[in-house]
Amino acid sequence: SGSMGERLTNNNSTSKWDIIRPALTNVIAATETSVNYGLMLFPSNNDCNRGTVRAAPTLNNGASILNVVNSSGPNGGTPTHQSLDEVRTYFANIAPNPDGRVVLLATDGIPTCGSSTNKSVTSINALTAQGISTYVLGFGFGDTNVSGLQQMANAGGTGQVYSADSTDQLNTALDTIPVSYTHLRAHETPEHL
Image (cartoon, rainbow, N blue to C red; front, side, top):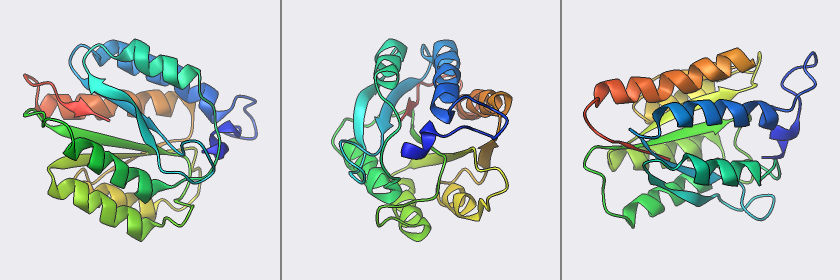
């Protein structure tokens, strides 16, 4: 969303977008041979359009994902539940990965664009009913109440919000999330969108 163009803190001149790009580069480079990474950005094309899958989940997909990330920038609102519904539709239309499917919802703001925490929880519950776990990463929330994110993590079956308010915390969160999933399925290759 557009708020990703804002600085992470008043003491930092770097935008959240410019902080998250190298963090994604690092985690994807370290794990892309064992995780089928895909990418959805939201919104797509205007302030409130639901996200679209910009890179399909597959192994060794880092270059494709990073090309999309590096050619994109912050814009628009945060149509969270609409984008989660699009993920569910996307997964329903491709062959299931028998090793599992995971969504990482990384957000720096509360749902907007007619979305809400309750609607997002409903959408995540629908993903969970299809066997798709949802991890939730709150980036740059600071002292903002993250109870809505906690509700989403609970609905996603992961039960923990990963919070990051600095570059180091973001790197740790992104390193921890795929590791926690792949430890559960160390011999398998999960899809991660």
